[in-house]
Length: 345
Length: 260
Ligand SMILES: Cc1cc2nc3c(=O)[nH]c(=O)nc-3n(C[C@H](O)[C@H](O)[C@H](O)COP(=O)(O)OP(=O)(O)OC[C@H]3O[C@@H](n4cnc5c(N)ncnc54)[C@H](O)[C@@H]3O)c2cc1C
Ligand SMILES: Nc1ncnc2c1ncn2[C@@H]1O[C@H](COP(=O)(O)O)[C@@H](O)[C@H]1O
Image 1 (cartoon, protein in one colour):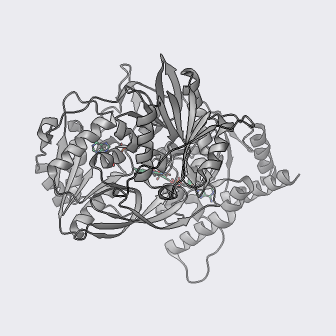
Image 2 (tube, chains in turn purple, yellow; image 1 turned 90 degrees about the horizontal axis):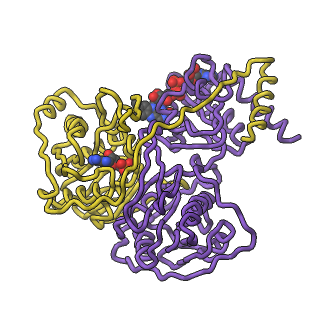
Image 3 (spheres, chains in turn blue, orange; image 1 turned 90 degrees about the vertical axis):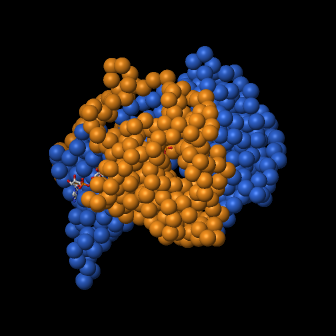
């Protein structure tokens, strides 16, 4: 018996959210008096596996073969399913990222195991793993347990503290053989457009978000642009030249409301909310966002919320710890300047 | 050629939802809506069925509540609807759900493509999709933002899909299960004729025996529901001084809160 943790990697590096999965796994492993086993597949598996030791993994199972170089659901799920069948872990833990969700859901089918997804809290009762997960856009919490020998758990990003580092400890390494699924690989990955370098919303400790108010940029668009086009131009300019500098000063990701996305001010990838991304940063700064219930559904879990809005009655202020009533095109540059001053001193 | 999609009825996203004194989730007497993420999968189902000159079917698994979502789907233009309900089956368990869903797909027979929305806004597990694909042994393409090509004669599909780290172009053989994102299309509104037609339709209900399967044991159990603790915030509106002073005060506060 052991607790498995899938270490998600990208282009040969571990995603730091995987340390949170090791942190969550520790809750289970300590209660069950068992070890944590890190599973590292793909490019650089060996060296990534070594690093998992300092985050609490006692052992690591690695597999770095040609077919696993690039993440593919079929080959990864076949290997994970095989390892679960061989080692019968009490739990399999991963972050509820796009890949973590599909991988664990698929492998859970192979062994007929119970899956509790998007968990924000874990506890054990009489050896049983109980996961707490938000439902109905966080309006209700649900507690679930598995009835099977292995419990599959995906955890929400930033809900669990990363496992504390212990210098020097290297896990015992074991090499796994790939499971041949050549026939099953019906997919061909043709190209990949990476957006590395920008901070991802779901991992961000700080998020600066802009809403429909971004269109009220006092700057004039170039000649010949009018109507909705002018609004789009103004909002885009605002994200680039007003919001982005604040985000850069803070090392923050840029978010948006659905109204801003639907109006074409910014790409959908940035949408926070019920039909966008659910985020829970330490700091969420909402600029020109009214705070509709569907937007709240995506950011209510933020530790500190700051609202900048020219309407003192905007619902976002009810959620905010700090607020400044004013035009975001005045307040945001002033905030950026104040920050830069403090940070350079 | 046949495209199948799954949907469910969910409370309106603006509805107040809470746990009542009996520990049950309720949203009062408010009507439900079609799961908002499914508006995109329903639209895509209609479009793909038309492109492939084929048939389209929408399935809900669970109680009669979901008929509303099925009628909405038909009113939009999905040709057939059916519901799968197995008395006593624990529909909170995704393995039970996917066993019934896979049974329905097999009973329908020659299905080329199954399209899902990204997730349910209510239970929000984002796992049903993958477990159905796995049970069927079909290729799974998640978070599809565009279908670049779909050749139903040749049995091939090419899509663009979203990852946290960027976008990927992937080609695969059919049959496949895909989940689609907001932005893949502009969902249509049901028109008057569609609504009338859907209102008159009777929706067949299949149980596990009709599918020729046994509903499996649930692999998970719900222990209970709770109302989350209220978010205790006292809002401080920073008002004193000119703009620079306000900005400086805010920065100081954020340092005190240790979020910077
Ligand atoms: C099924 C469904 C799902 C949805 N999902 C989402 C979702 O995922 N995410 C989401 O965000 N919404 C979602 N919505 C939409 C939501 O209901 C709101 O329409 C949306 O959040 C409003 O966006 P907003 O706050 O930017 O715009 P508005 O509500 O128009 O607010 C704009 C705000 O900006 C302020 N403002 C304007 N100019 C300035 C300025 N110069 N300086 C400072 N402040 C200014 C105004 O006072 C106002 O408060 C969903 C709706 C439905 C029905
Ligand atoms: N009971 C159900 N019947 C039909 N479709 C469903 C049901 N539950 C979830 N789905 C669909 O499965 C997809 C993923 O949802 P979920 O895994 O519940 O987040 C969404 O498109 C839902 O509409």
